[in-house]
Amino acid sequence: MKMQNKYKIMLIVLIFITINLYLIFKPAFIFSDENISNKISSNYLEKQGSLSDYQINSSKIFNTNKGTFVETRYNVKPKALVYNEWNAGNGVEGYNGWLINKSTCIRYQKIGFMYITIESFTEL
Image (cartoon, rainbow, N blue to C red; front, top):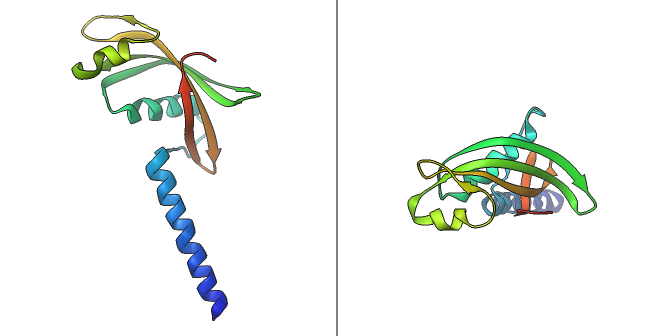
């Protein structure tokens, strides 16, 4: 009987940790090996919350001694209030509020079928 209670407590703790990981990292759930780099890039851009639209031009996965990364090149159409934030860094101004040829390196960790963004930056 005590062993069953121990397993129940462990299960509750595991569920609690899983829910917290999801809420903190908002991982990409990817069930297919096709276009993983595009899916990770899309997940990253969708989490920004300040975009009206985006287009991924290219993405590729590469490994370094610092971890596994997705290098992505994209265009974004930021919402008006955050245009200057997105205009900083790389890329150039396009037409109709689009910023084009931006790039980001996304370091991620795979846990089962979840891909969690660890950090992102413009240059390696």
